[in-house]
Every structure is written in structure tokens, then in C-alpha cells.
Amino acid sequence: MKTIEDLGDLRGKRVLVRSDFNVPLDGTTITDDGRVRAALPTLNALLDAGARVVVTAHLGRPKGAPEDKYSLAPVATRLAELLGKPVALAKDTVGESAKATVAALGDGEIALLENIRFDPRETSKVDAERESLADDLAALADVYVSDGFGVVHRKQASVYDIALKLPHAVGKLVLKEVDSLRKATDDPERPYVVVLGGSKVSDKLGVIANLMTKADRLLIGGGMVYTFLAAKGYSVGNSLLEQDQVETVKGYLAQAAERGVEIVLPTDIVVADTFAADSPHDVVAADAIPDGRIGLDIGPASAELFRSKILDAKTVVWNGPAGVFEFEAFSAGTRAVASALVDAGKNGAFTIVGGGDSAAAVRILGFDEAGFGHISTGGGASLEFLEGKTLPGIAVLEA
Ligand code: ADP
Ligand code: MG
Image 1: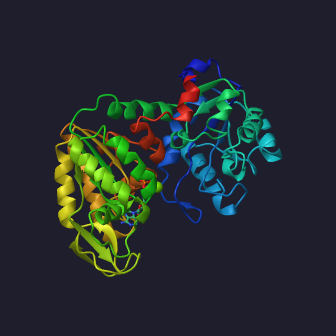
Image 2: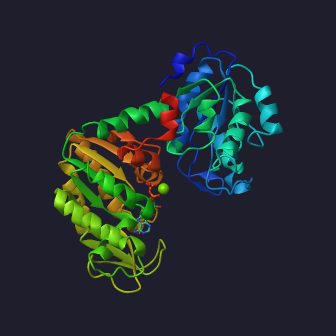
């Protein structure tokens, strides 16, 4: 892969950068700016080189049309603060405003195009549609830099097709992510422990089959737990459950036993009456979740168990919070996992946090980011990387 330095003299050149600015928002307030900060090394390097920087990114899940609540305006404001210079925000993605905004850029200046997913061609399954958007993007720039790690597993116009249209390079963030994740995929130091949680259960169940061939131990927390408990024949009340995956999970449990991969499930659960910060809650045994109640965190005994199963690891990958950490009452499990990773790191383990919400949890719960080996900005992308899959947005840069 070519790096930014391989692109030659960039002074006066229009450089299109794909960044990942898919930040969590509360109204128009960014609640975790980690992804914006992660984009700075590449953007600063390009600006320092005198390039005219044009950034494209997405935010949230608009349905292929502009929607105010998914505007990148809050990101433009935060980015300007962090860069210490103005960021010109175009009113559209590749339309008249984008063209005018780019044309007005001087050397060492930066513009941000509106949410690229306001254009339905970005995520189209029809090659010609994505290519036509890539043509429109290419018309705005001389070279392309891929730095949105969170989207490199997607074959999308601003990630994949654009690289076929312009001279291209890998950005500093994507390079750092790939280097760090390779440490866990190419011959990881063992024990290699993977902690899975979060709420994207069906997405993540898919990776288990693959991780089972690589990891020594799998710890299951978060919303994924209930499909495992159901597979063991326990009732899970109103907890998150993927009923149609129960048979698959039974298969994983059998496979793990055969392969000698240890699967660690919580032994106790914090159950609540409703999905709410102030809901009454209790700790119950994992095989005794009452009807009508919802499991929102792993219990204290499980937190201790998880800690002990993480502490002796030499490589730890964590993807997905152990509970609904956004609510203080259900944050202890996630806190325990994060602190066990930090302590394993002190014992010499290489630790990786992947997943947008997991990375946000680390910061929101007040952990020092320096205590982790690598905090990935990409959830799906980091998991697919760890599974050994080919990521289209990386492969296209290698071509
Ligand atoms: P990541 O972004 O780290 O990959 P996900 O997007 O899969 O993680 O899931 C994050 C979300 O999972 C968090 O918002 C958290 O509140 C939620 N979550 C964790 N445990 C549970 C649970 N038991 N029930 C419902 N949601 C949960
Ligand atoms: Mg998430």
C-alpha cells in the first residue's frame, strides 16, 4: 500500500480523504469525539504539506436522502476546534455547493462534504451506481486517501470505487489499525482471549465460528449472552434474544467443546423491570432469570470470573460492552472488563478494544486510553479483520 508520503509533493493538490466521522450524537452534541480525533494525524499531515483537503464521511443511517439530524455540521465544528482552523462545510455531497466549496479552497485549507450517505449511490449494490458517485467524487480531487477504518469492510463508492478512479494512498489511521490488528491475527501470543458483547447479536454470532479456530478462550457478555443461555435451555425473560440463532449457538457450544476452546458465560445477571436507567433491578443466577425481567448486565460474580479469565492472557480482543454501560446501574460489567484489560496489559498482554460503543465506553467510563494496546475506531471492520476476511477497502489499496 502506498502511504501519504509516497504521493509526492501535495502542495496545491486537491486531496479527497475518506474519514470515519460516525460519532455518537445527543441532538447536535457529540458525546464521544474519538473518531474525529483519530482522523487528525492524516488531516494535519496533508494540511502541513499544503494540500487542499476535501473530506468525505458519513454519519448515522440516513436513507439515501438528506436529513437534518444526520448533518455533519456538529463534526465540522468539532473538527475546526481540534485543527485550530476553519472547516468549510459544503451543503451537499457532490453537488453545486460541494464544487463551489472545493473551488474556493486555498493551499493548506480544508473542506468537509455533507454526509455521503445522503446520496443513495454510496451504498448501492449496483456497481454502475456506485461508480457514478465515485466519478462525481473524483471530479472534486486529484488524489484519494483512505482513512475511514470503520468503513473499510464496505464496498461503497467513497471507500472502494473511488480508489479505482484516482491515484490513492492509505491514511495514517488505517495504517495504524492494520498494523495493530495484524499483531492479533498473525501468530498471536497465547493465551488469546476474545471478549464479545454488545447488542448487534446476529452480526457478531457470525464471527464466533471463525474466532473459534483462532482464540483459546471466548468470554460472552452483553446482549449476546441470552442466545447462549437459551441454547443451554435456560429461560431469559424479556432479555435480548435471537430465537432463530439458538440452534446455531448450540452448534458453537458443541464445536468449542470438541476443539478445546473455552467458552465462558456469565453465572449471574443483573435483571431489570424495564430498559431504563432508573429501573428497579436485582442480581439473579444465570439459569434463574424471572419471566418478564430483562438482563442488562453481567452480575458481580461474573465480573470477577471474567476478570480472572482475562488476567492471564497474552493477547486480548474485546468487542462489545458487557452490559448497558450507558446506564450507571448496568455499567459494572463493562467497567470490570475494561479494567481487566488494563491489568492484563500491565502484565505484558497486547490488548485491543474494537467496536464504536466499546471504545466510547472506555472513555465515558473514565479509563485512560493509554492503558490499552490499541483502541480500534472500527467495530465491524476490526472483527472482519480478526476473522481473516478480505476487506474491500484495504484490498483495493493494495491493488
Ligand atoms: P460495539 O459498537 O462496541 O461493537 P454494539 O454496537 O454491538 O457494540 O453494542 C453496543 C450496545 O450494546 C451498547 O449501547 C449497550 O448498551 C448494548 N448492550 C449491552 N448489553 C446489553 C444487553 N444486555 N441488552 C441490551 N443491550 C445491551
Ligand atoms: Mg455499536
